[in-house]
Length: 192
Image 1 (tube, rainbow, N blue to C red):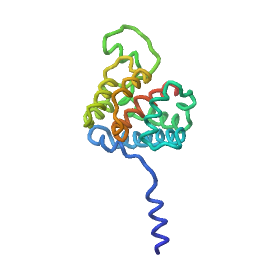
Image 2 (image 1 turned 180 degrees about the horizontal axis):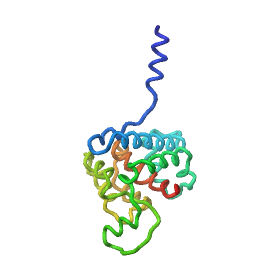
Image 3 (image 1 turned 120 degrees about the vertical axis):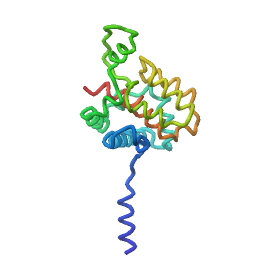
């Protein structure tokens, strides 16, 4: 009996990520499932890339290494599969927008055609992160993500690293922001 209980307990304690559960009320259940799965895939990539580091340290190492990471890191099969699923759902537009749409909506540049995606400043995802955030350092980063017309990840990372505390790397809102505002924002450029 004890052996059976141990086996069942082991099966039910599969590693999952449930960060997006905090977004209940401003994202749909389907969105939450996809966001959680995407965070799980990203964290597996971090564990593979930084096997000797704890997860908060792996997030920090990722930010420091971002400029030197090869495209293969952003084009992993699992990553592109989750992007495909997000793109085929209504979740995609809640997270990203084509840069030219954002620039035109900001009325800063007319008829400019840029062929990359950035965080949708009017999207439910960034609004929901901001709404659920409790930390000023992370709030500054979220506001930057949502307000910059050219918020391409390398520019964002420099500002992010300067402001984060060691404790911030444990924050689930920050982890989602890094996953989608940096990692997947790079990756989505490769998915066509």
